[in-house]
Length: 498
Image 1 (cartoon, rainbow, N blue to C red):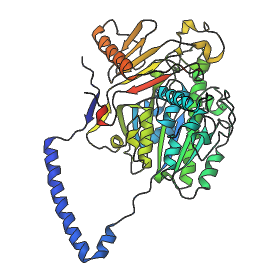
Image 2 (cartoon, helix red, strand yellow; image 1 turned 135 degrees about the horizontal axis):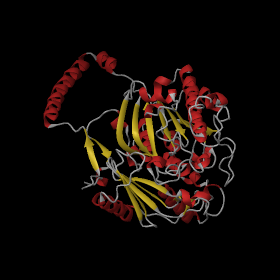
Image 3 (cartoon, rainbow, N blue to C red; image 1 turned 90 degrees about the vertical axis):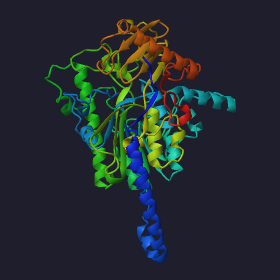
């Protein structure tokens, strides 16, 4: 078994290339003819010139702990998500998106800056060395020059933040306005972080209605379906009487609550005539496990053992929806492996950033727009320095909250289109799953396919040893949580490996 790292998609064959060359010759002749006519009739040239299309508004909606199976458009027969289903039908869905963490703070850092969580810490350490002092956790983003709102501001955008925000106040991250108006180190769930639950969404409309025609970046991160599971009674009633687990009833109702909030937001955009010029993106900051008829231990706080804070697929995977009428193909579903670093690069590309290809990820725009010969990822690698313990080990750790359920051990995984191999490195344990047939990782095949496990382990170890320079864990990041989802492919040709 040989693991490829990159492949082009839909590369044109020689016959098509010949036709293309012939077309170019005809086009050249036609252009010369038009140029001659323009010299004789200058008005004709003016008539053929059109203004470039303005960049779109970008509405970026980030769910919180929304498990990948739990949406109608992903095939869930129970959870009701009519608004997300409609968005998916009207746009392009990447089925296999991957957060750079199975917990929110590090994955949101990647979306904000394009940096992997370890790169974030390295940059923070470098800045501290330059200024000669320690930067409190949550404040370092104010020193980062290339945050998403700062980058798009250079392109004429105004930006707005709402909802969950671990990185100081909105202006520390470079947003022009937002709901995160105050920040106290260590107090991350401060006022202004509960956009849409229960805080009103009026600040969004105030920002939009007072804009002066500039393109807008709108970063909306409602803390849903995240705990506490406190859905309104009418949504809870949708799931009662079906024999579902109690936490499943509440969690699913919170997902429908998120969906209804998205509907309210889209309704406001429709009322303002903004949908035709708005790129809408939806994803979840990390995954979750909640089976319909299973009572997960500590499920009320962190869900099932293979979800949030774990090294498993359910903790990292999220579908990613892109919608923009007339620009993003409708009803298209792609099975590419996609990292959050790619989402950051894609937003910059649509905003018009000339240096979008210099980010750690690569833009998905060529793939979305069905261009040919577009490279796609063949594998994703992730590593965690702190993760969930096994369920039988819960309560063995000191402290309260999430600290009771995590342990300072290294674990890593590699995910290809067919296989997913994971290793608890400090324990000397490993597992192998035929992920295309076993998406919930229920049948460990490591003993049946030792050669496959060996090849994947070698590729994973090679990557870790060659490409990963992990800094000392930062005690300010959820108990040293460092979760990295890395790609073998970079857009720039010198980074491609055959």
